[in-house]
Length: 141
Ligand code: RB5
Image 1 (cartoon, rainbow, N blue to C red):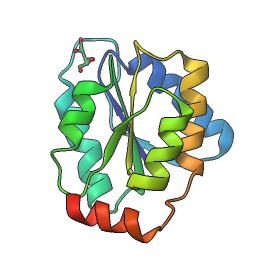
Image 2: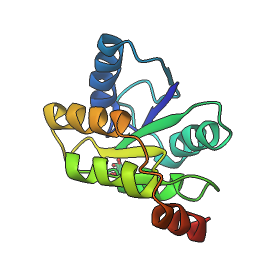
Image 3: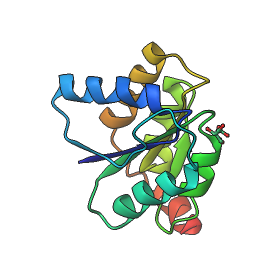
Image 4: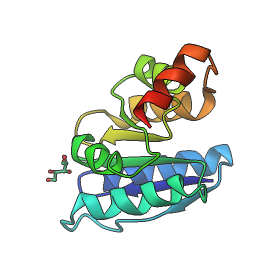
Protein backbone atom coordinates (compact mmCIF):
# COMPACT_ATOMS: atom_id res chain seq x y z
CA UNK A 1 0.00 0.00 0.00
CA UNK A 2 1.38 3.37 -1.08
CA UNK A 3 0.41 6.54 0.83
CA UNK A 4 -0.01 9.69 -1.26
CA UNK A 5 -0.06 13.29 -0.08
CA UNK A 6 0.45 16.75 -1.51
CA UNK A 7 -0.24 20.43 -1.10
CA UNK A 8 -1.80 22.70 -3.74
CA UNK A 9 1.57 22.92 -5.55
CA UNK A 10 1.58 19.15 -5.97
CA UNK A 11 -2.11 18.50 -6.52
CA UNK A 12 -2.04 18.24 -10.32
CA UNK A 13 0.96 15.91 -10.34
CA UNK A 14 -0.66 13.77 -7.65
CA UNK A 15 -3.68 13.29 -9.97
CA UNK A 16 -1.30 12.05 -12.69
CA UNK A 17 0.36 9.68 -10.24
CA UNK A 18 -3.02 8.33 -9.12
CA UNK A 19 -3.96 7.51 -12.74
CA UNK A 20 -0.57 5.86 -13.24
CA UNK A 21 -0.82 3.73 -10.10
CA UNK A 22 -4.33 2.66 -11.12
CA UNK A 23 -3.04 1.63 -14.56
CA UNK A 24 -0.28 -0.38 -12.89
CA UNK A 25 -2.69 -1.99 -10.43
CA UNK A 26 -0.79 -0.62 -7.43
CA UNK A 27 -2.89 -0.03 -4.32
CA UNK A 28 -2.73 3.41 -2.72
CA UNK A 29 -4.40 5.59 -0.11
CA UNK A 30 -4.78 9.29 -0.82
CA UNK A 31 -4.30 11.48 2.26
CA UNK A 32 -5.08 14.76 0.41
CA UNK A 33 -5.12 17.60 -0.34
CA UNK A 34 -8.12 17.49 -2.64
CA UNK A 35 -7.98 20.70 -4.68
CA UNK A 36 -5.80 23.58 -5.85
CA UNK A 37 -6.85 25.68 -2.84
CA UNK A 38 -3.86 26.86 -0.81
CA UNK A 39 -3.06 24.54 2.12
CA UNK A 40 -0.14 23.92 4.50
CA UNK A 41 2.19 21.17 3.28
CA UNK A 42 3.33 20.02 6.79
CA UNK A 43 -0.20 18.73 7.46
CA UNK A 44 -0.01 16.28 4.54
CA UNK A 45 3.63 15.44 5.14
CA UNK A 46 2.78 14.35 8.70
CA UNK A 47 -0.26 12.30 7.66
CA UNK A 48 1.75 10.30 5.13
CA UNK A 49 4.88 10.07 7.28
CA UNK A 50 2.88 8.72 10.22
CA UNK A 51 1.26 5.88 8.25
CA UNK A 52 4.59 4.93 6.67
CA UNK A 53 6.41 5.04 10.04
CA UNK A 54 3.70 2.90 11.66
CA UNK A 55 3.91 0.30 8.87
CA UNK A 56 0.28 0.85 7.82
CA UNK A 57 1.64 1.83 4.40
CA UNK A 58 4.79 0.37 2.92
CA UNK A 59 5.97 3.55 1.16
CA UNK A 60 4.80 7.11 0.56
CA UNK A 61 4.88 9.70 -2.19
CA UNK A 62 4.68 13.38 -1.21
CA UNK A 63 4.45 16.31 -3.60
CA UNK A 64 4.58 20.06 -3.05
CA UNK A 65 5.67 22.84 -5.38
CA UNK A 66 9.37 22.14 -4.98
CA UNK A 67 9.30 18.90 -2.98
CA UNK A 68 11.52 20.63 -0.44
CA UNK A 69 9.13 21.73 2.31
CA UNK A 70 7.15 18.50 2.28
CA UNK A 71 10.31 16.35 2.50
CA UNK A 72 11.76 18.45 5.33
CA UNK A 73 8.51 18.04 7.27
CA UNK A 74 8.27 14.28 6.61
CA UNK A 75 11.86 13.74 7.74
CA UNK A 76 10.99 15.05 11.21
CA UNK A 77 9.02 11.85 11.86
CA UNK A 78 11.14 9.08 13.39
CA UNK A 79 11.85 6.24 10.99
CA UNK A 80 11.14 8.31 7.89
CA UNK A 81 13.70 8.63 5.16
CA UNK A 82 12.10 10.95 2.62
CA UNK A 83 14.14 11.59 -0.51
CA UNK A 84 13.54 14.50 -2.88
CA UNK A 85 14.32 13.19 -6.37
CA UNK A 86 14.53 15.10 -9.63
CA UNK A 87 15.72 12.21 -11.79
CA UNK A 88 15.71 8.42 -12.01
CA UNK A 89 19.33 8.08 -10.92
CA UNK A 90 18.47 9.70 -7.58
CA UNK A 91 15.35 7.55 -7.18
CA UNK A 92 17.31 4.34 -7.81
CA UNK A 93 20.23 5.36 -5.59
CA UNK A 94 18.05 6.41 -2.67
CA UNK A 95 16.29 3.04 -2.69
CA UNK A 96 19.54 1.06 -3.06
CA UNK A 97 21.60 3.08 -0.57
CA UNK A 98 19.20 4.85 1.82
CA UNK A 99 16.22 2.47 1.76
CA UNK A 100 14.15 5.65 1.41
CA UNK A 101 10.55 5.02 2.39
CA UNK A 102 9.07 8.26 1.02
CA UNK A 103 9.63 9.79 -2.40
CA UNK A 104 9.26 13.57 -2.53
CA UNK A 105 8.60 15.33 -5.81
CA UNK A 106 8.30 18.96 -6.88
CA UNK A 107 5.15 19.48 -8.91
CA UNK A 108 6.57 22.76 -10.22
CA UNK A 109 9.99 21.24 -10.92
CA UNK A 110 9.52 18.00 -12.85
CA UNK A 111 7.06 17.42 -15.69
CA UNK A 112 4.58 14.55 -15.45
CA UNK A 113 6.47 12.31 -17.90
CA UNK A 114 9.68 12.36 -15.91
CA UNK A 115 7.83 12.27 -12.58
CA UNK A 116 6.09 9.00 -13.48
CA UNK A 117 9.41 7.42 -14.48
CA UNK A 118 10.85 8.54 -11.13
CA UNK A 119 7.85 7.00 -9.35
CA UNK A 120 8.32 3.70 -11.20
CA UNK A 121 12.04 3.62 -10.44
CA UNK A 122 11.41 4.36 -6.76
CA UNK A 123 8.68 1.73 -6.39
CA UNK A 124 10.47 -0.97 -8.41
CA UNK A 125 13.95 -0.74 -6.85
CA UNK A 126 14.65 -2.87 -3.79
CA UNK A 127 17.06 -1.88 -1.02
CA UNK A 128 20.53 -3.34 -1.69
CA UNK A 129 20.81 -4.81 1.84
CA UNK A 130 24.55 -4.10 1.69
CA UNK A 131 26.18 -4.13 5.12
CA UNK A 132 27.65 -0.64 4.68
CA UNK A 133 24.29 0.84 3.79
CA UNK A 134 22.55 -0.91 6.70
CA UNK A 135 25.25 0.49 9.02
CA UNK A 136 24.84 4.03 7.71
CA UNK A 137 21.05 3.96 7.96
CA UNK A 138 21.45 2.69 11.52
CA UNK A 139 23.68 5.67 12.28
CA UNK A 140 20.90 8.02 11.09
CA UNK A 141 18.28 6.30 13.24
C1 RB5 B 1 3.57 26.59 -1.74
O1 RB5 B 1 3.43 27.78 -2.41
C2 RB5 B 1 5.02 26.13 -1.74
O2 RB5 B 1 5.73 26.88 -0.84
C3 RB5 B 1 5.10 24.67 -1.44
O3 RB5 B 1 4.37 23.93 -2.37
C4 RB5 B 1 6.49 24.05 -1.42
O4 RB5 B 1 7.18 24.34 -2.59
C5 RB5 B 1 7.27 24.28 -0.22
O5 RB5 B 1 8.41 23.82 -0.06
